[in-house]
Each structure stands twice: as C-alpha cells, then as structure tokens.
Amino acid sequence: MMNKDFAGEMLTTMIKIRLFEEKAVELFAAKELPGWLHSYIGEEAVATGVCLALNPGDYISSTHRGHGHCIAKGVSLKAMMAELYGKKTGYCHGRGGSMHIADFSKGMIGANGIVGGGIPVATGAALGSKMKKMGKVSVCFFGDGASNQGAFHEALNLAAVWNLPAVYVCENNLFAETTPQSEHQHINDIAQRAVAYGMFGDIADGMNVLSVYEKAKLAADRARNGEGPTLLECKTYRYRGHWEGDPQPYRTKKEIEEWKKKDPIRAFQQYVIENRLLTESEIEKATHDIQAEIDEAVVYGRKSPLADVQEAVCSLFV
Ligand SMILES: Cc1ncc(C[n+]2csc(CCOP(=O)(O)OP(=O)(O)O)c2C)c(N)n1
Image: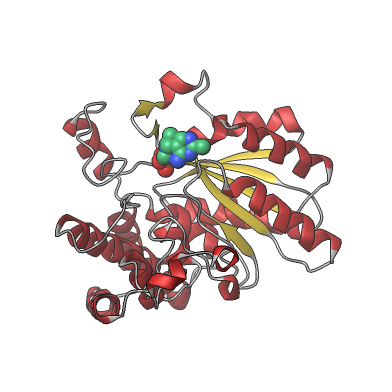
C-alpha cells in the first residue's frame, strides 16, 4: 500500500543508485577505479521495485551490471565503494571489484561477471530454501543476452519441475553488449519463454517502479505460497554504454534521448508530488543526505589500504 514512508523508500533507493552510479562513472573516468564498469543508470526502477517486494532475508543474485541490485538490497555503500577501489576493506577484500560484490548478511548472494552465472546460483538457493523450509524467496537478475544461455534454460526447467520459490527477473534493456535484441533472439517478449517450462510469465514496465513492484510482489507472493517460480521480464533501457568507454556505434543518440523522456526517477518524483506523498523540499533534503553518504563512501574507499600481496595467492599454493 502506498504511503509516505514507502514512497520515500522507493524514491530514495532509486536516487541512491543513480547518484552512486554517477559517482562511480566519474571516478572511473578519472582513472581512480581499476577494472571495468557497467553502469545501471536508467534501470533503477527494476532493482528498486523488485527488492522492495522482498523480505530482508530473501535472496538475490546479480550480474556484471549489479551495483543497483546491491544497493536496493541494502548493502553497505562503503564496503561496495572500497571493493570498486580494489581495497582491503571491500566486500571481497579488493579481489573481486565491481562485478563481484556479495553480502550474505543482506541476502545478496553474489554478483557475477559470467553472463547467466547468477541464474543457477539463485536456483540453488531457492532449492535450499525449499528443502530446509526456510520460507525464503530467491530472485535472480539477468539481461536479455543471458536469456540465451544454456544455464538459463536448465535452471528454469528445474525450477518449474521442482516448484521452487524462485523469481527470474529479466532486465530486457534491448542489448546484449553491442547486439540488439532483434539480432540475438527471434521474440520480443522474453516472458513468453516461461510457457516452455510450464511456469508463470509476466511483463513489467521497467521504467515504472510501481509496475515493477506490483508484478514482483505477485511473483514473490506466489513463490512464498508454494505456487512456484515466475519469469518476470522488465522492459528497460541503459542510458550509458555497455561498459564505460563503449563508443556505442550500435544505437543513435536520438534513441537514447527518447528513452530518457521516460526516466523512472523523474516520473516517480512527479507521481509522489502530485499525490502529495512527498514535498519537493523533502526530496531535496533526502537527495542531499544520499550524496553525503556516497561522498563518505568515496573517502572510505580512497583512504583504505590495498590488500596484502600475500592475500593474492591462494593459501593452497603457498
Ligand atoms: C559467459 C559469458 N559470455 C560472454 C561474456 C561477455 N559479456 C559480458 S556482458 C555481455 C552481454 C550481456 O548482455 P545482457 O545479458 O543482455 O546484460 P546487459 O549487459 O544488457 O545488462 C557479454 C556477452 C561474459 N561475460 N560471459
């Protein structure tokens, strides 16, 4: 039910993801962050709507574009930023970087640089939850490209056969790296694939956090009530390149600008103001506080020590 607190949580989660990502982009361009960076800007409504439909103990697995999922599940911005910096105080002690953040205490069971890699992981967690009668739902996020991986088909088939409490959230942002969806699969709606496994398939407007929340809540409730898994496709769009530095010859600036008109944060901000759930000054204050939290995380990441060289070597070989 929409009330002031819930609307505030939805909006601030999306703003936190956007501002974190903008800062990460800036730091990466300044060569402060090593490795690779895949920005989630534009897709904030998906992680936010799905994670707010879950209980704190529920599981999520994520992808190479995973910062938004982590933030929506409540992980520490400091430990995340430190991991992006490759520092000892990061989630993986600086060994994993941007694509490998996990925080089991928050139910965030792992981001994954292997496309589709998180799908069997979340399926295993769903199986564990069912076998141990834990009552937890397991969600995995993945892209349209990942829906062509063998792991996707195997995992969804087993989840249906075993009636697992799983929700498969496909973030269809219309591109798999540089390949448009129309060139890598012969369907528009990935949710159609649910039929092949005998599970429920649904579609949400991934630029509308309320649409995502509503569909994710239905799917999570079904999973928790023993009614089996769901394939939930969220139609979305990434504003930036596949990776930071991507020259993007595969799409036009006009297309990007068209999608920005549907910006999920601006749209929801308008909704909460029109419905008198929040005021502009409340939103301004919340945004200011979030920026301060992110700036603190950056200082923490910057100042933290690098991991010891010995830690880079597996203890088996020392
Ligand atoms: C198994 C595997 N194959 C290829 C790659 C290289 N790769 C990284 S991201 C990506 C595209 C993924 O597209 P999609 O699943 O749609 O996610 P998106 O990047 O759009 O969020 C590819 C092919 C990889 N990391 N892992």
